[in-house]
Image (tube, rainbow, N blue to C red; front, side):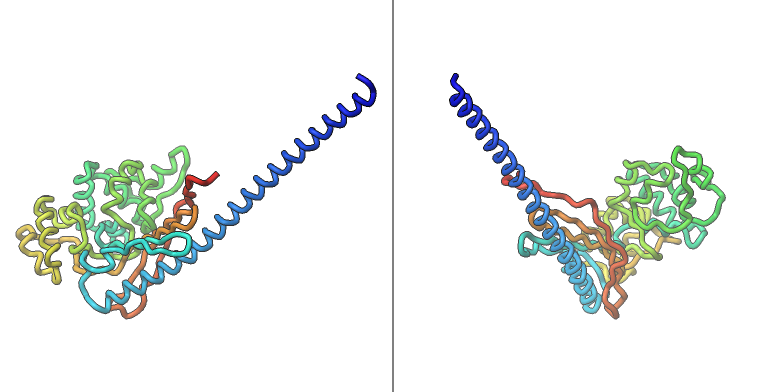
Amino acid sequence: MTAPGRQRGVALVTAMLVVAIIGTVAAFLGLSQQVWLRQTQNLMDLAQADNLRLGALRFAAIALTEDAKRTKVDDLTEDWAKGLPPLPVEGGYVVIQAQDAAARFNLNSVVDGDTPNPAAIGLFKNLLTANGLDANLSDALVDWLDNGSVTTAAGAEDVDYLSTDFPYRAANRPLIGVDELSLIKGYSVEVVEKLKPHVVALPEKTAINVNTASETVLAALFNIPEAQAAEMVRQREGKPFTDKAQLQPFLPKNAQNLPPYDVQTAYFIVTVETHIGRTLRRTEALLKRPAGGQARATVLWQRQPPLKLIKHEDSA
């Protein structure tokens, strides 16, 4: 090949190499821009979801407060219990649901100050047994909550927790959430999952609402067969209880020292799900509603699991 031919060949290879480099750079910049745009959109969607969450919780607080002004009885026929259909918003939709926290057993009630509460402990033992669990697990819960250092028969105190691979002490205070059970001796993940539908952790003494409690909770509350509790549920579906005296036909004869129960509640668990763009955010909040709607319901705490991204068919 002559010198001019070699030069033309080198120039052609160089040009092809330059075009390839430019194409690679352009593709990289295009991909980077696409990723940046997607990240920006996700941040905007998340900000919108947070604003909608706050608005949804305010809406729930107002709705529950207005409900307290209208009636002194809380039951599953009311609007708050029926829930709302998904509410369309720009870029997605919002789902708001409310549950009566007093429909579940308050774990913190097994101690009254630093003294074990026999009635509440008995109810909890019934719940444990109904779920195929060891009734003696109640001892460990009592030790976890009370401020004493004396270990109950099947319980655990600091000496038991400090001897583990990752030492820690008993809380000696009320539970903040049900998930805290997993720190207590004997409460495995499986145990906690079985109990979750039936228990709650509330900051003060509460009565179980017989208009919203499940058959399992009612059976444990009154220490009656679950079939009898099911009959109680069927009766309240048509005509909710308006007075505790209406439950007398369902109770055992000479029933004494029963845990407190009522036909209304002050605590609600509100769940808000926001579906905006590719983001799915779920928030669970505990609201306290003053009796008679004298003041607006307030949010005591709220928590959010990790953010989820929804993969669309057209997403990269």
